[in-house]
Amino acid sequence: MQKLLASTAFAAGLYAFAGAAQADCGSISIAEMNWASAGVAANVDKIILEEGYGCTVELVTGDTMPTFTSMNEKAQPDMAPEFWVNAVRTPLDAAVKEGRLIEAAEILADGAVEGWWIPKFLADAHPDIKTVQQALAHPELFPAPEDPSKAAVTNCPSGWNCQVSTANLYKALGAKDKGFELVDTGSAAGLDGSIANAFEKKTGWLGYYWAPTAILGKYEMVKLSFDAPHDKADWDACTAVPDCANPKVNSYPTSEAFTVVTKEFADKAGVAMDYIKARKWTNATVNSVLAWQTDNQGTNEDAAKHFLETMPEVWEKWVAPDVAEKVKASL
Image (cartoon, rainbow, N blue to C red):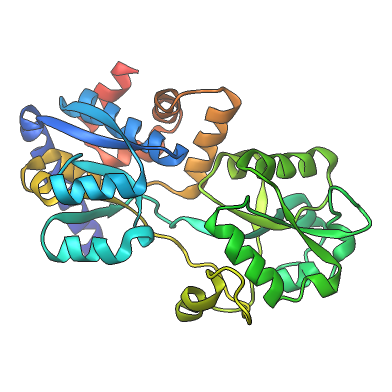
């Protein structure tokens, strides 16, 4: 009860402050990163901050390293809504310690997820398969697309970091000796198409994928356990190193996705920072929004509006009631 009262009092104070500070929101520059979930998040922020709080928001094209460098060296843009911080962990830690950048809030409540997956319809039909090792014991369930007499583990396209980790785990698990070949899908479209094809034909599929993504919003998949903890030291020294001589079975890390802001912005942002600290969503929510975007060939702005129109139970918790009404009225 004490926690509930404290939470209620905090929310009331936050909402009261938000109402008083709306007029002072000012101008904000937001990085619209070049992957779908981050691009949609930037547009959600733009709509809520402009329509709900009266801010003036400019979206600027972004990508991991260029955006980090610009924020770190020039304090622009003001914020990156979805930043996969593990990719820049060392320089980001230094920038935070030296007072240039701030990890404001974890936007993905359950983290960004990587691993090996199978279709849910297959998991339901074979409830004994819960680990990668158990899946590899049944090559007959995972036919290779080019030669159904063989089994397949589907890998990422060449050039992706996950291609290296998947190849090393394939080797560590002895998958070749169990009758599996490692299939390079050639492109992101090829990887997605292999999953779509498996669902269309109701055939087995085993391979690498990640969330949040449109594919996992459209197709129900189950992530398998590697039956081993994540060993960061071994991951960095071997699992993530091309052609590691003696890889061991290892679990993928859960990647952290934070909203990163400049210290300069945080010091003056007021209500915008309060909103940023309050808002987060789950992989399931983002997967669903991205699936809608793909099916409807929507822009990031279209997907953001779809989210705001159809999932008020998620985002209304981030803002005061009067702000929510303003946002709804603008849609």
